[in-house]
Length: 194
View 1 (cartoon, rainbow, N blue to C red):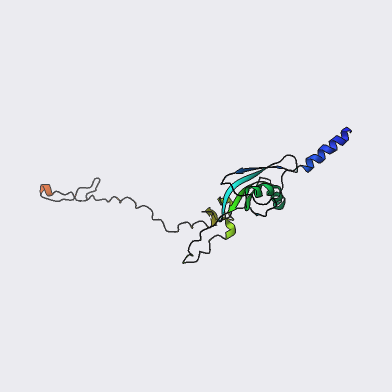
View 2 (view 1 turned 90 degrees about the vertical axis):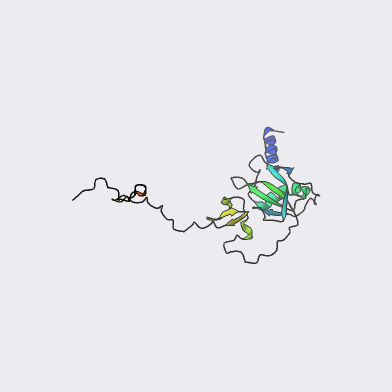
């Protein structure tokens, strides 16, 4: 085989190789699902109904290692997610927008709270606004309790300036001379007499 042919075979081998997928558990072991199982892919954490059971990382080399397409990422991690018993994943991109890792989730039963007696305020977040950080919320909204909400309005109550110290009068208060039997006004310094 010539050197040129060896080089071509080596290049084709690089193109055929996808990224390696490594899985680690972070929760109780689950029963494996069929190899070609279906699962949901989230790009933000779901509000409730899921528990974390593991994570998958793509360990890629070369220019074809990662993808910015969710369906390609899903196909690359499917075997590990199904083997772990996952029902969903949260896909995490790198700084280039390429999906490099995912958190594996298992669906769990959720106890539903009694319905609220009052409707939620209009500023409440929609189900798609799940967040962990303020930067995941749109505009000036902030993340509180896993939901994007409008920040509290700044206080508009007028602030009273502190009271000024009492003005000194030209005349000082009378001196209590009860001890001495009389009460007389104190003389004022620098008072001009006419």
